[in-house]
Length: 92
Image (cartoon, rainbow, N blue to C red; front, side):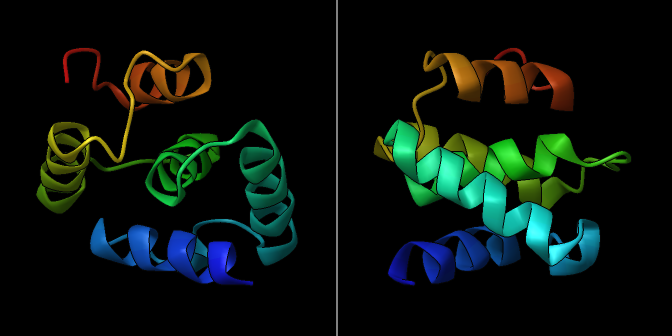
């Protein structure tokens, strides 16, 4: 439950509505991300990348860069790197 709340907070920080995807899909993705050992910030990026449409709000890029700088997001982790690429953030 703590992980789920932490991911929701990370999505909110990026100004991503929790309605981006069906909640069941989000919960499943959170479970997979947690099992992979991803941080809540990394999981939020992976979940965001699974969405059909993404508008690249400035807050999203700011959060991603901040989290990478703080060590809360590893852009070299394969799942995260793939998500960043799908979102158009190849150079973080």
